[in-house]
Image 1 (cartoon, rainbow, N blue to C red):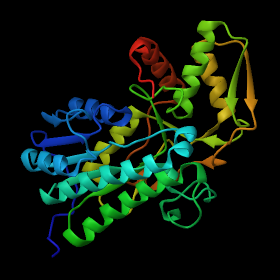
Image 2 (image 1 turned 60 degrees about the vertical axis):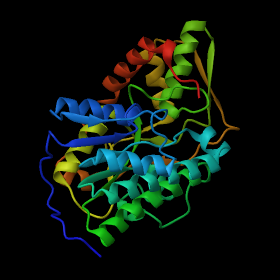
Image 3 (image 1 turned 135 degrees about the horizontal axis):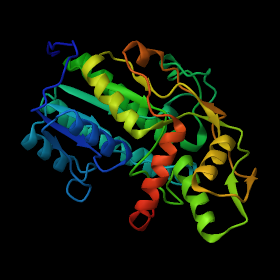
Image 4 (image 1 turned 180 degrees about the horizontal axis):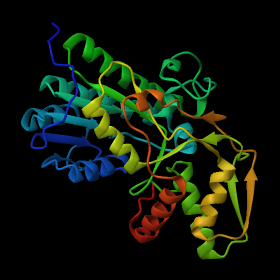
Amino acid sequence: MTVAHDFSPGELNREATFYVAGHRGLVGSAIVRRLESAGFENIVGRTSAELDLKNRDAVLGFFAELKPRYVVLAAAKVGGIMANSTYPVDFLSDNIRIQVNVLDASRQVDVERLLFLGSSCIYPKFAEQPIREESLLTGHLEPTNDAYAIAKIAGILHVQSVRRQYGLPWISAMPTNLYGPNDNFSPAGSHVLPALIRRYDEAVASGAASVVNWGSGSPRREFLHADDMADACLHLLEHFDGPDQVNVGSGTDVTIREIAETVASVVGYTGETEWDTTKPDGTPQKLLDVSKLARAGWTSKIPLSEGLERTVAWYRDHIGSLREK
């Protein structure tokens, strides 16, 4: 039976319990910082050691006890091209289990507002650029991360289904490539930008004459600082409602070669850069159409150059405690 709910978004109650799944990750930690700055008083997070989101009974029990009013699902198994193409079963199985458990548990306690976070890789490999939300399921996915993409698509449909069947005003947001504090800088698990930061910074430290990057450097990518993403998340929770996912990005892109040059400059690397064209490039371009987000009243604020300087500074401050997988 469908339950009638008020679908009008508005200011969230700063005293209500707000659970952030994945609160220590790149996006989750940024969301916690944004919620704290906005005056939320009861933000809850659990580490994977405290709560395994793949354990259905544990998740259902946790929600039954906590009864959060608001939830952001930022927890996921993520990685770059190498990790996604090497461990597709892990990316499919782990993410679907996390999503199903958290979304089912949220429904059972009637969570009022929930934001599910996906990824721009849900869209077809050759989608028309910039990519509109309507491009979902209109073509073949990028083969190197199709398993992860399918899991995230399942999450979008899960949210849409909850809206249809139970009337809960939940929403989904699909961020572009994110970067910032608490990112994964490991050689095997990182995305392109943190991988470049680590590679060039280590080259500076070792005095390496050259750095070798994957691919041709020609693909174009859009980048958004995690703090901008967190600000967009709170804005959407308070100002947007609708069944379809919302793209979140800066609306501009650069080539991988250009971003590599920028990273090299920020870290102070003056050697040569070589490109291993025997390695895959991935999708030729991924630029999101963010017009729906703009209509909802939000645009990005942190320039790429400023965001990179802040991220490199954070990386260097935490270089001894970074995860290695």
